[in-house]
Image 1: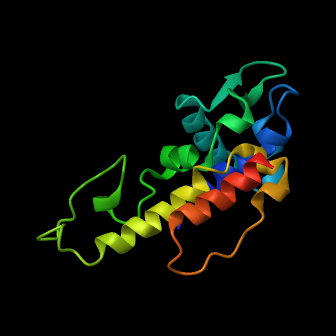
Image 2 (image 1 turned 135 degrees about the horizontal axis):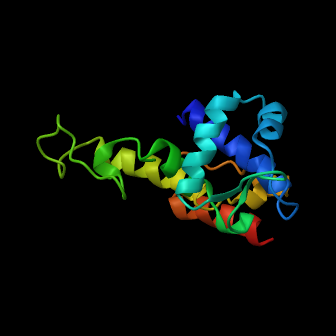
Length: 164
């Protein structure tokens, strides 16, 4: 489950994607449009700026804007900045690996292969969903995937929608 902070970050990026190319957007505009507490939003936008996703301009006509094109920012990048690891358990994390403290043998662990599949399914969606999906909602259409289907089927499904 993503945090409320991550949800707010994604909502703010949706607004900035809609306004892409039009200049800086005021925090108060984003706050009002997406019903995000202004102080909380300020901290989120600053964090996204510090990680190179946004840039800010001070003074009259200032605000925040995307530093890069919306198609170059995916949800996995955003979630890692805001929430840290995407993996459901630390032992299957690509970027934040830590051995589980209650696990005696990772090789024999019955839970690890399941958590790897959960991680892969989530990453298949997060890494293949860019901010462009907010400008083209058809990119967000879902396809039912049978339980037990290989992750490649999900990734192929997402990639086909992204290139169509």
